[in-house]
Image (cartoon, rainbow, N blue to C red; front, side, top):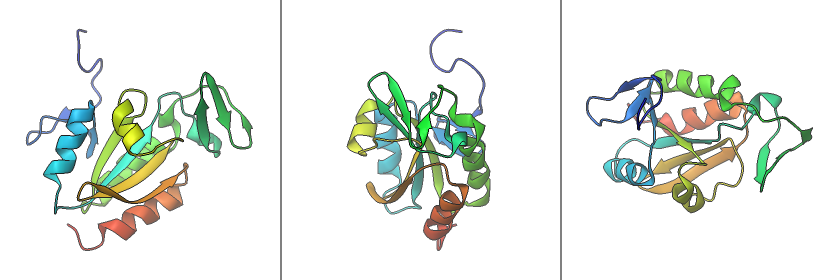
Length: 157
């Protein structure tokens, strides 16, 4: 296939023309991220999943990238994919918490946004409100992710 999305992973959102996976918008560029944040000024918070396709959060440790090495808190791990554990759960939460906007950002593709958000480990989850980070955590804890959603979805529908 030429340019753009190389496989079908969701559908185009009719109101925004962004690729959406079951309620999760896959952000394709730094400009798109900024546009989404601008559109959400004064609106419901956005929860952003900063991920990398080489990240293996099913291991239960934190993944830090240092040059060409992948270092896991508690040991070393071969390169695997993000989708084994936390990504499907993130998508599940997007169907449950309508008071949040769910976004996915690939840290290797959106370098500028990743740097501006001070993301230095993945997976990282940040809550953005009115263009600013208001809460975050790093790791693959389903319990912490759900608690983050519950905390920030309150009062929004």
